[in-house]
Structures are given as C-alpha cells and as structure tokens.
Amino acid sequence: MISVKNLGFVYQGGKSAALDGINIEIADGDFVGITGTSGAGKTTFTFALSGIIPQKIKGDFYGAVTVDGVDTAVHPAEEFARKVGQVFQDIDSQMVASVVEDEILFGLENFGVPYEEIAKRVDRVLKDLGIEDLRDREIEGLSGGQKQKVAIASILALEPEVIVLDEPTGELDPESSREIFKILTDLNREKGITVIIVEQKIMLLCEYVKHMMVLDKGKIAFYGTPGDMASSIDTFKDLGINVPRVTELSASLISEKIYDGEVTLTVDEAEKMVRRILK
Image 1: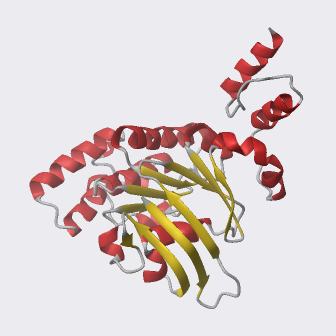
Image 2: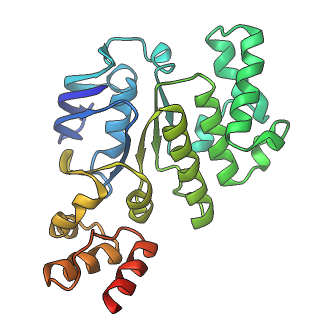
C-alpha cells in the first residue's frame, strides 16, 4: 500500500508549491495513470514516491509518503530502488552502460545479487519483455521503444513491488506506445506489480489503467476510474485536458436517454454502442 498524506513540496528557490496537500492511497496491484498540463506537479509527485524528493532534490518538504509502511523520505533512496523502481522521462540520461545486457546487470551487481541469481533474472526479464534478441545490442543504436523496454527490464530485474514511469511513450509512435502499455498491463496482471504511469495520451490511460489521477497546480483535481471521467467532463475541459470523443459522445447520449449502457472509453466500445442504438 502506498500512502500519501498532506504531501507538499516547494523546490529550493521556488516561489510556489509544486505539490500542495496531496492525500491519496494506492492499493497493492493497482494500475494508476497520472495526467495534467505542464507544471501540474506530475514528475514531482513521482520523485516523492521513490524518495528522490526530498533525499536527492532539496526543497521544503512536508507531509509523508510511505510504501508498505516504509517512509520514502528517510529510507536510503538507493536501497529503496528495490521496492520502487523508476523509469525517468529522459530515458537516455538513465542509461549507464553501452550494451543492453550490461545495462540490466548494472543494478543487480550494485545490489550484490548472487551471480547465479543474476543470470536467471537477466534471462527472465529479457524474455518477459520480448527483447531477448537485443541482449548484445549497442543501446545507442536502439529505437525509442526498444530503449524503453531495456529501461523497464533493468528496473524489473531488481524485482520491485512498484514501478513508476514518467511519460514513457512521449517520443514513441502510436503502435510502440500501445506495446509499452500492453507490457505494463501484463506485468500488472500476471506479476501483481503496482504500476504508476505519467502519460499525456489520455486514450491509452482510458483503455489500460484501473484508476486515473489528474493533477493541477500541485493538487489532485480528479481521481477515479476511467469510467468516472464521464461525470467530470467539464472539470477535464476546464483544465485543458481533452476527454476522448467517444466518452463525451456516450455521456451525452446517456444524458439524453438515447443510450442506456455504460460510458464508452475506446473506439471498439463506441462502435458497439452505435450498433446497439441503431438496432
């Protein structure tokens, strides 16, 4: 369980709070998508979850963040990486090796994982992410999607309970973006890993996540399931966040009593809705 109580943070030299009074609990095995406009506090929030704030990035910090009762502000951040793994927005800055296998080995060796166990974990994560063929490849020559998979693999090799990703699809095409979300969904469903992902592509969030959080000026403006979004369309619009058209359409048809089903979140669901109405 991730527990966030009255979390606030002002960067050193900053004039306003990047986070302001955040209160939320995230259950084990949840898949939470975080969105919001630029400067809303999304990256700052992820740093607080992994202990980077306040341990590595200084400023005025108040409140508390705990993961399974462990305080992220006190527990050594380097050691905490085994509990909460983070994939940063700038993926190239996260890479420390030149070859894929060495990148995955780096964290395992630093944490003193036994050699026999290291080999098993490397083989397993390469297979889980479908990148066994990249083992001996130079990272510099990989595509953006391949680099994201390598970064995720290097984190998963440490066997964290939580994985936090900051806009992993920002530089990816739609097909590669969807592939990353499918991988995360499988990890969440099959291995029970709690996934927290910052993402601007709201259609992806609607299709894959279990809960969605919208941040605005360091505060939570919305938290609920993707289906709950239908009752908060005006809130999303006021914040400059585009609600999927299929969701807005179904919400409108429900309010006009033309459709009596569930709110649609994907194109496939919208197609079924239209066919049902036409019948």
